Image 1: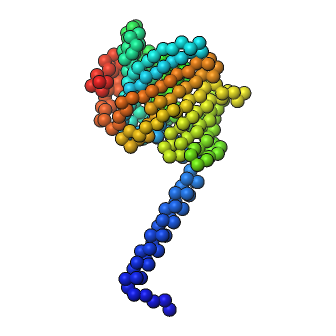
Image 2: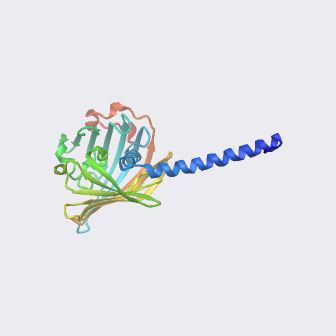
Image 3: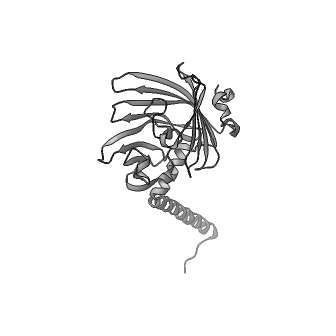
Length: 274
């Protein structure tokens, strides 16, 4: 019969429990990573990309380059307010440069369960234009980004398949449920396992030729949230591309929901733009 003194038995017991907990921790992590489905990975990627914090503010610089190397610059501030995690959101995009687009304002009422509502205010015409659902995948103010890219494509619009994975990334294929509503046949993503940020997105046509690619160049951690600070989108058909750089990012600012209204199209909230 095994016997020991009380003190040595306690030490042995603690050591055994410690080793057991460590093994459970390792096994749990391994199982969790292995068991993530394609839908779960996409859900995490959606939260990491568009729902960091309860709200957010960022200044963006956009360089638009056409196939002949001619470039245009845009500068604007993005304000965001979450109504619910992975659900409804509001976006307000206010342009400050160059002079010919200063005062242009884009408002999005995002509704993942239905079509988003989008408005664009054009100060030169003093005109508020409603962006129809059919125009959501057209150029955003002359860039190679689409209106839908600003607020993100709802995960429920596509079927998701985990194709493979390695130590650092998940590789997924996404096929639209309504092929007549988009210009692509399918798209593929490489999602970082540590941040769940999509680091590369390639869109393909029905002949499996790439038509558009988005690449993340730089990620920084802001208030604990991994944040894309530089990206590039390439239009393989035209040969043009757009570089996007984000600065002065901040989260959890207490932005009022009331500023995301049609009133702010003509009178942007200066308090949040300074």
